[in-house]
Length: 262
Image (cartoon, rainbow, N blue to C red; front, side, top):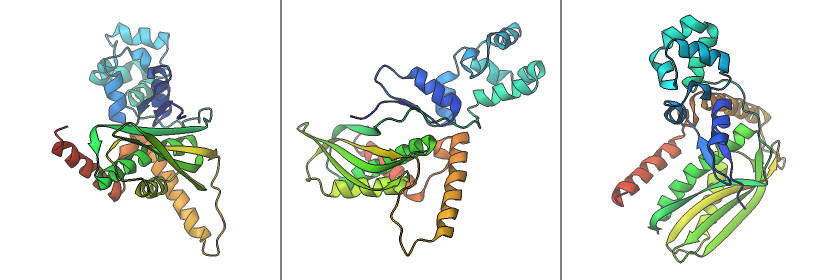
């Protein structure tokens, strides 16, 4: 069973996502733009850490909604100083605080249901690449690594199958994608209505077999790059960093939607 949960790119977005999700549902806020769109016409109390005293001070100068904050930035700073600047940053979706990992679930995943059956395997792999990217982002935010990657497929006749592979623990998007794509290659070629990926078998660190060809210095550099990337994504949203393959997959999916009149 896929554990349904909320995902956010920052502490404030994760808190809002958890409050927005329906019972047994799923909600995600992965970019600054998504957060702004969600809160722009809400009460200023939706800003994380903005209490009743500050709310009353802002209301006295006519600032009642987040949109009012956007339109009166100078007034907020004049009234509240550095605290006002912090409130503006949070309203803009800028939040440097570290997301604390939620209680670990046995698994989490994402699936996409198509409006019409898909037979184009390359299109399906483009979808899997973007799913893998989101799951990687969530796993890295949580500081977890998955040992098992499961592909889920629902065919045109609604028959459902899963295919899994276990190996070295990972939270890297390219590994999640290549594993899921390889599993898809082994699935019989029939029209597909739904495709998804689930991660499970979590650990708090990388577990891999040692090899004579491993380069500790390269592993260290890769880890440092991953940390820089995650910090950027946490601050500015998942879309701030994309691989060339991910951008190509996005373009191919957009072409597919236009072709199908979506």
